[in-house]
Length: 483
Ligand code: NAD
Image 1 (tube, protein in one colour):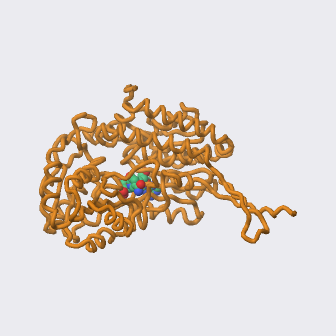
Image 2 (cartoon, helix red, strand yellow):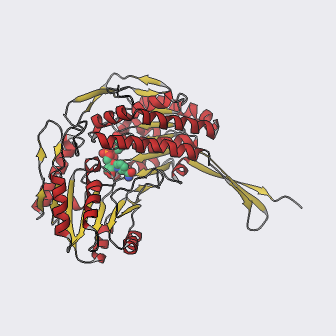
């Protein structure tokens, strides 16, 4: 495995070329607060050039055989795995996830390329008689066309892979706009796709600190056919409004407020194991992160004490230090927000069991924290924490747990713990939530449909239906053959 990478390319990538800009923006290493790289801060004219390239490349890419597209995607999968160490290091540096988790993200991101390489050759239509017998119904599927993909900073490789891999498999070209806080991995990915044989213009990457100004004109461009966005619900709402005039196809992977429900018959140790993952994975900065721990009052003390003991011994440190369990959060404002949520919870009567403070060390560190007795009136019960803070409150009945778990406008992920699988499944099936972990603290799987209900999004990524987001269906009516 190669480990020879510093920060890789820092220009935008348009039509197979690296594009520099007069202006640059700094990407910080959250572990130190220092500048990691200066990246080209491009304006609308470069986005327009990227759109031109994607539009020019569309017909040629759509005309390649599914096998050719699959071969490129498989080559990308292999190259990603070969470069696990260098890519994992880059992700740790640019967004602060611990190295072991970054390696896991390379494997997870690479798997989307393999999964969609396999899906590319199964884009089947159908043929059959109409119910009246008067005609034949023939359906086929075709690429929707050029795609604008906008991604967040928290999973720099996986969020891009989950969009780029199915789009390319379907035969679509892409303009990718990664988050300005962590754009380097997307640039590295673009270079790697080019090496793997992707033709110029099929994937373009635009780096900017002015996302609305740069992507806005693309949403009005008649050549764009699809917007796929992962990020906050607030920005998703705005983009849906911006996409409405052209009735653009949209997929939205938005914010969450996941409940983690521990029923009274749950195996508490197992629930604590799951909570450690559902809370601390990615330093709590996952849309699927457990945000509200709802624990039956009869097991609450055991759960809170056990979780606090485990959190208290987690090693906090620089993301690239192999000893680190919990890295920094992404930025100074994120740290500020987390501290504010904990302070507000305490002001509302919550009790800090462990942590509850920022840590020194130059970067943006917050101690792994458990706050118990969190009242529903505290902001932390309603807002995404996006940090290593577990907010716990208790319930007395299963119905109360359900009402509180489901009583939010979000519906991305939920977790339910019970020794009785039927009971856990019943609970899960009542929830208006796109994904539910039963007795486990992770739901993400490239082979499963990832996405949310209600204000958590539209559409699903990955799984057997992930490619549908990038396909149009055409139906042709053919008269029945005369006897
Ligand atoms: P964000 O909404 O601030 O930014 C996401 C992306 O949108 C970035 O690339 C940003 O530059 C861009 N953007 C912001 N304003 C824009 C505008 N007006 N026009 C066009 N682009 C714009 O989110 P974030 O802070 O990067 O990520 C965290 C959020 O993402 C959390 O809410 C999290 O839950 C959510 N998220 C959801 C999923 C999911 O699959 N549902 C996955 C990861 C993260």
